[in-house]
Length: 292
Image (cartoon, rainbow, N blue to C red):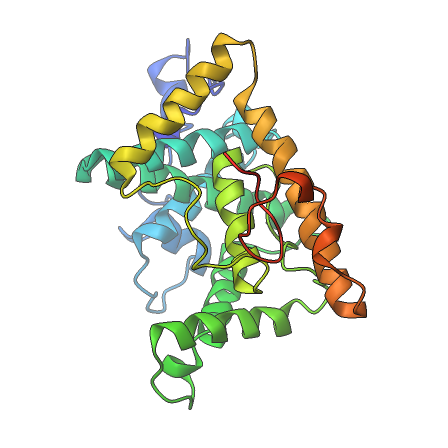
């Protein structure tokens, strides 16, 4: 999907050529050297040498022009909330492009997701109480990545992959001291299968689920797993059951169990018999998973 033909943006439709041209991002502002729009907007019109703008600067300036007075009415009225549906759509299209193996599609869809980031940053820059822009977004991300890689940017010695992962979790714990559970920070709006993978992974990290426990199903590859999952969904659908809702319900129970185990370990009161699934639990660790 072209980012400049966002659904709902019809401001140029039905206009004369002259009227439509006035809404397009110009290559330069009147009276300025033949530099990019981004350079003109960001650095101002002066006789002094101007930094060379990048394509990202041009995109930032394009969004600013679309949202400015005289720009696109549809873009101007958008909010963080109204754009969520487009961010979701573009993210899924990016995933599809990654899985399709088309580099041209990947290039386009990465651009669409980048456009969403720039759009949200532009809204934030104009919203009282937010007051940050795309430069602040990039600066925060750079600071985060540098801080989480002391073995690259700091004095820490070169580390193994396992040590890097463990160190990453330690740094995140320092960054977010308000999180009291391994489950904190997991977006509950994730698709159920992705959420299940994330929840089980967090449980394994703190020893609530044994990583070397016997497999409940003898599955050796994704090629085998896919048809099994499809068969489960098909069987559920045939009986009028909602697979997504069923898995989410099971995950809510599992997350309650994990939090109870964390609390029990903290105060020494947890026993294996406290599991809500104890009657049907397999010996898969401190928490029990239902037998299949």
